[in-house]
Length: 237
Ligand code: FPP
Image 1 (cartoon, rainbow, N blue to C red):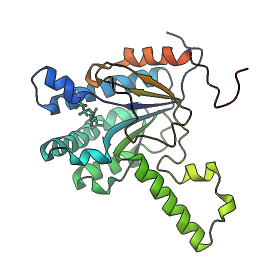
Image 2 (cartoon, rainbow, N blue to C red):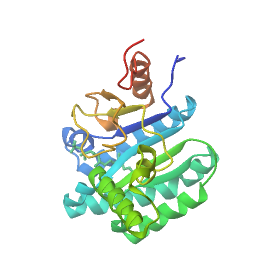
Image 3 (tube, rainbow, N blue to C red):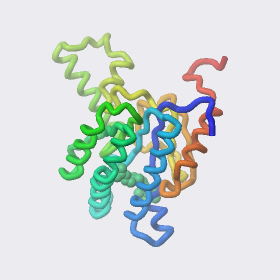
Image 4 (tube, rainbow, N blue to C red):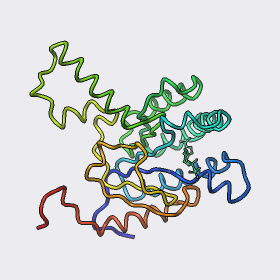
């Protein structure tokens, strides 16, 4: 499969794990376990097509309100995923990054994450960002506080607060805005994910549940993206 234009940054809301499990009379965690297989397949395909950035919503700031046993299992899965996948990440030069308030993440999973981030730094391949304990409004508020503090200290002047400067204060500093955002499972909303960064992102919604979403589904989304005409608010030429 060849493409005329390939998105440089793809963001994914991996939704529908619970429904996938429910349909099979399984506990929700089995949906998340299958969801990891989908993530691995999508990463492999992203590498094949030389996608530069892949950002996935793994755990939102609101997800802490889920039943404690699901939260504990998800954190264990995170720890397990990172430990098992680290050699693959390194071999394939994948740089692991995260966005979100990871202070809330249990120590074991947090240290596995920080260790993997350190060990995959500057490898030069796909930049895989896990959004963990992430909420976009919190991210924006955090940026506003940082900027206000810098102004208060006299490090920055109000007239110097450009869009570029603002972006550099977000968790996603240094990562370009997504070109394509995919949400699975037939829900049509952003759910507090990258609200500032998706101003001109192309949106792709599919009814496929995340555990059923594999590399070939990513290719279908990229095929759809290829047909989009991006104007960024300008007139069509
Ligand atoms: C949304 O489905 C999915 C999540 C809240 C977790 C996403 C996690 C994974 C894909 C696996 C874990 C990934 C890592 C990196 C450890 P849902 O549970 O809201 O599904 P539902 O809407 O059908 O209930």
